[in-house]
Picture 1 (spheres, rainbow, N blue to C red):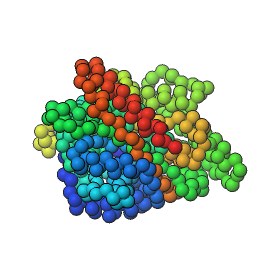
Picture 2: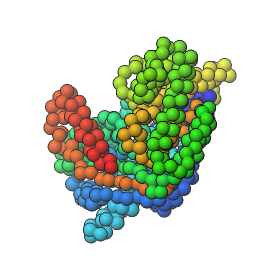
Picture 3: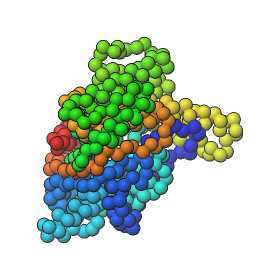
Picture 4: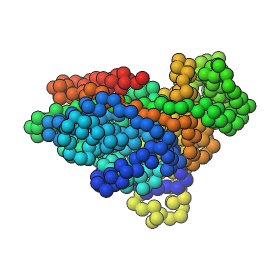
Length: 461
């Protein structure tokens, strides 16, 4: 969880992948521990079981890949920070097991390169960049400008790497197992670039994208722990605590309690917005929660956009990426040759700019956290999973406002992960349409993005 920065920092350098078998085998050996126990405050952990579905499809794809017949990219759902651990289990444990059962001989390790947000190392530590690089990770900048170095390396790996590649097409987590955020176009574009590179080299491999869904369930939901979490959030928010005892209307009471808490927090944020953003109020208490929430998120983004001189256009995620990129430019100073060579005056001004940018980015972080939150999500299906997800998002919000640095998310019971592999989508079949002209290329990318979104949504239970 990013926290405010009060000093200018050196420029962010690109972190290339340097796959290392030793790092891979160490992490693979530690995987059961990493899944179950929290080794870092920002890891939810608590995964007791991982169920995999349709792994046979992936085994066959790896066999074809290793025989030089295909290139493929795995597009996986990214609702939680645990998702990469689930992906590693899938590739390092489930795929080899099913291959042995089918008497299919695969070259080991059955692994993949993967893209990760360069910002992860800023709040988790430099050690994470070293580890992810050793696992075959490639850093990428998300923002208003194309990360040409990162994309060039990703394109090269997709076409020529010894492993397939994995990417989260949503671009970030949304905290919801049962909502797929609007996909970014990067995965579709990477796929067509790979098909283009193979065609130029007169290579015959087929290019595929494999949708992979990851969903979480609580094995033995702890209503007691959820009760304690809501009590803490109520106390932190200035509400009277209303614990729930044993009741046959348990789900109904928890639904009302979460909606009450959400309504209160939203009202406080609206008052803050009207007072400190100096904008005309655009909502009233008689409107539904979802309408008011979207209005307050828009205000927060506009406050950051006005500071960074950005246009308020595109989806919430696209706007967040532009704000993040602009903030990084003010904090991680690529325009300064050396911060240590600055005079005290110039260093002080640089730190002032960095601190201002960091604070403005908090508006974006709040919007980013709530991008998929709706009151209807828990109303239409009042399950423990949805109550837990919404409560943990509220926990993140209140922790950010309190200024907590990397607070440990409460654990609400042991969880089970379900990883489902869909049938692959062929880009080779679509490539002729893509290469006609620019308009056709954009349409092909949009169509592929839509089909991928549909495939991921269909796998949600």
